[in-house]
Image 1 (cartoon, helix red, strand yellow):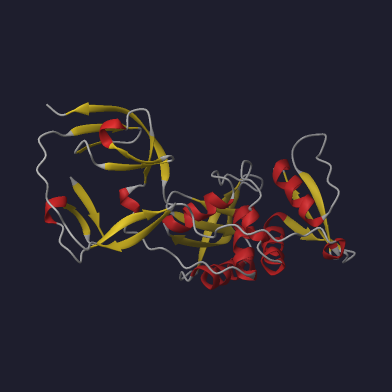
Image 2 (image 1 turned 120 degrees about the vertical axis):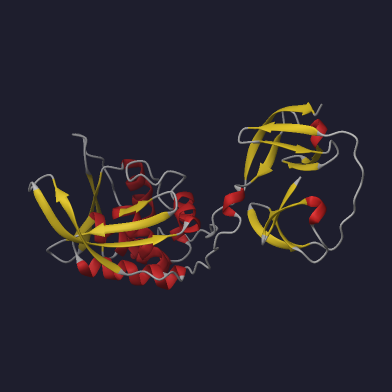
Length: 291
């Protein structure tokens, strides 16, 4: 059986006391230290067939299930805790809440792209990209820089100059997907309630989101958000105590954000984890005795 040590995979028989290995603590991946290794001869083994892989273990190996520990021989039909082995050695970020965190999340929800292992923002305005990069570094500790790029414009039928900020981090990408309900597509993402931690963080979110999907109104009494993601706007409107009526013609809807929305007293802080869950539950379809 292969064991995931911090330094890489090794066979269980080669693990020594004092070795650092990965384990799950709830939905978080953490390091632990091996204090003892005991060898027991086993005459039989079983193949455990799951949604993602098949692995071979002794029948009495304990697997974590929602109802407690279960022996591998009895795991058929149960769900067991699991995590991607390839993600064990990735860098885990120290995420700092506050205004910069809120701004980064808001700007990403408006104009960002969340890939499998990267996060990027491509915009026309240099000041927007610079502010995004600064916020990203402040709340995540990742170095971020601006790149001059060009991108095609379907309306003007020519390339336009722009600026890109891009960082590679599967941990950050997973965190952002978790914040918006699992799908970071702009039309399907949910309102990220993680930004409701405190008023400072939420103010940063509003500034970042409106920088991308909104504008300041000429009379100076508020700002306007324009988006076709109606469920997102419905939740946001409830937070700021605003009236919101989706566009009856379809397409983009508008949400007015008054400069005095805080005076309505509708903001209620909520605590949500900043770090993404690193484990999930998978189904065990079959347990086969090894010949």
